[in-house]
Amino acid sequence: MKTPLTIAVDGTFASGKGTLSRRLAAHYGITHLDTGKLYRATARDCLAAGVALDDADAAAKIAGAIDPETLTDPGLKAGPVGQAASKVSVHPPVRAALLAFQRDFPAKVGGAVLDGRDIGTVVCPDAHAKIFVNADARVRAERRAMELQGYGEDVTVESVLADLRERDDRDMNRAIAPLKPACDAHLLDTSALSIDAATSRAIEIIDAVLAAKAPT
Ligand code: DC
Image 1 (tube, rainbow, N blue to C red):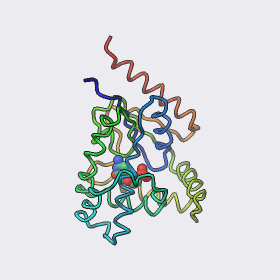
Image 2 (image 1 turned 120 degrees about the vertical axis):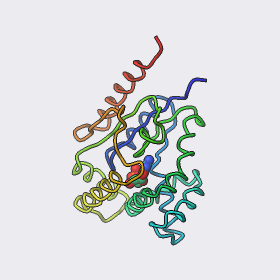
Image 3 (image 1 turned 180 degrees about the vertical axis):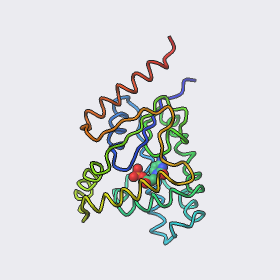
Image 4 (image 1 turned 30 degrees about the vertical axis):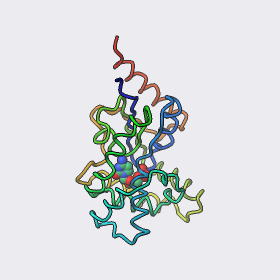
């Protein structure tokens, strides 16, 4: 049986990977999974249950009980939940508890774009195409500050920049599944690109990769 189309999009916080992934999923007619939401939901439920974010086993139990139906909760987008998600995501048992759901997802839905931090390296190492998205830290902070201000959060570009540096540092330097491009990932710097331009570029890259892999 042919493997359903799987596209891995990894990247830094606020690099634009979420919007890009949604658009790629629509373009290729497949489903989008924002895997950050699984870590955010774990963090949300830890905070609600009073579980310490450094209690790996208790957090893993919560991760294993996440109901995918609750991933549309708008509360998951809040800045403090994102920071807490970055903290619970360093624990190997938490990552293990969330792995099978992500790995099985493309086959279950007939093809998917997964976005996250370790999709191309750990979750779907055999993805048909892999994109690694990044942008200048200040550009990302400006974008994210505008988004959070839109949700009514009292943040400045400087506060978001400090938060972003802390998150990048934790995500890139954790011992397990650190954020890094897979060796066969294609890098996409969105610092100077509109979302339309970034999407067109990503489609060009993916189409070229798929054409090169197609049987002749
Ligand atoms: O993409 P995001 O900002 O919603 O992700 C929140 C945190 O979850 C991020 O800082 C690190 C963690 N995460 C992860 O470790 N692996 C993933 N595949 C996705 C997110």
